[in-house]
Amino acid sequence: MSTDNLKSGNEPVRLSALTARRFLESLARLDRKTRTRKQVDAFHRAFREILGGMTGLDFSDLYTQIIIEEEILLKEHRGIVSGPDEYRQDPSAFVWDRLQPFIREVWKEQDTFIKECAFLRLAGVYMVEKGKRDHLRGRPALLPDKFLLVLLYALKNVHSLHYCQNPDCKRPYFIAARASQVYCSEACAKPAQRKAKKEWWDKHGEEARRKRREKQERGKHAKAKKA
Image 1 (cartoon, rainbow, N blue to C red):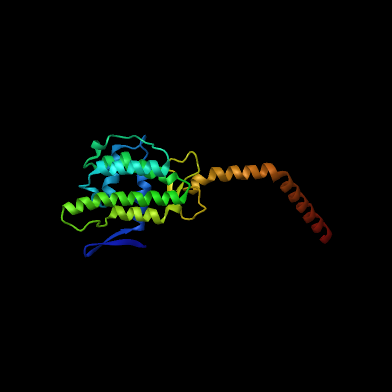
Image 2 (image 1 turned 135 degrees about the vertical axis):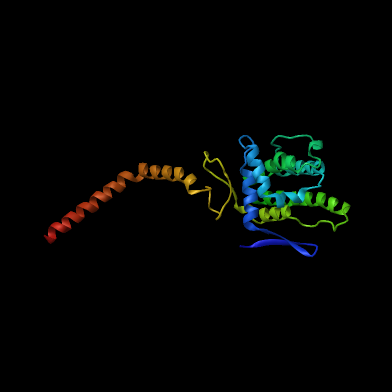
């Protein structure tokens, strides 16, 4: 499996493509209206190494910058918004109240260029705030971390961030295996397949049945001649 990595001092920062994919899909799929505390806690446990890099950031500044970028890129400000002071030193609130709605909106965007710009700008404002923290700690500015690698993975795969076309899908955010994939799973594709099959038979069924009868009749005549 391919692994993205960047240097952080003498040690490379590594994150597998599978982990980046699981993080993005899991974050996008936990719907605000139905998710439970248990699910949120499980998410934080599963991805503590990625989320841990956010510790010590001033999320009031990051919050403000991402709102500005969201309005510019997506033309519309959506989601539940809390005041910037509520995000100071609070990664969890930032992840669920600002980052998740932002990523969900970008995910559904049809224009690939806008999606690329969104992740580029998000990575930029994140690294600015991270650089401030690293500088205060006496560390080299702009050290990469695993959350940045997640954003770089998203940037390189924006064309694969698809939204399932089954209106009844409960987990519509998925990373497609191929560009033409419009359903997240075979189960979600089946209703559309059945509908397409029914429409075909409504339109061509009578002709297909007529040809089948003619073929059967020709077969009977052929057998009769041999007899």
